[in-house]
Image (cartoon, rainbow, N blue to C red):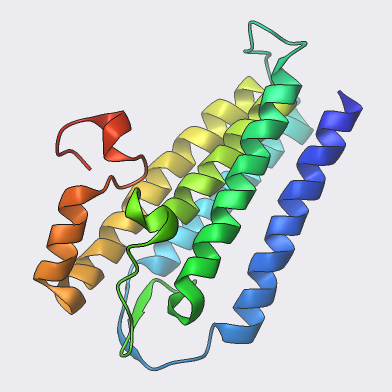
Length: 196
C-alpha cells in the first residue's frame, strides 16, 4: 500500500511539475481573440472544493472505504492515476502553443484533432479525473470520491461548455463537425449516440 501511494504521488507531482513549467513559460504567449469570463468563478469553486475536501479529511477525519477489493484497489488506482497523468501530458504536448490555463482562444489558435483529441475534445480534463479516481482507489477514500471527484466532474463539464462556446465562435462549422465526431470527456464509442 505504501508503494502504491508513493507511485501515485510521484506520478501526480511529476505531472503537476510538467504543467506548472508550461504555465510559467507559455501562459502569456500569444494574443487572445477571446477569453472565458467565468474562469475566475470556476477556479474559485475548484479551490474551495479542494479546501473543503482537505478540511473534511484532515480536520473532521470523515472518510469511508468504498472498494469491495481493498487489497487490489491500490494497484488499480496507481494504474488509473498514471494513465491519467500520461493522458494529460500527451494532450498538453499535442496542444503545443495552443495550451492556455486561462480558457482562451488565441488569434493564431489551431484546431487540434489528432492524438487524444481524435477521441475526446477535452482529454486533459479526462486525465485529471482519472488521477482523482486513481487517488481515491489508492487511498480507498469514499470522501475523495464524493467530495472531490464528483464535483470536479461538474467543474470540468462547466469549463468545457464555456471553452466550447469560444471554440465554436472562433472555428465555426469546423468545430461543430469535430464536436459531432468526438465525445466531450469520454470517447463516443463509450458513451454512444450523439451525446457529448
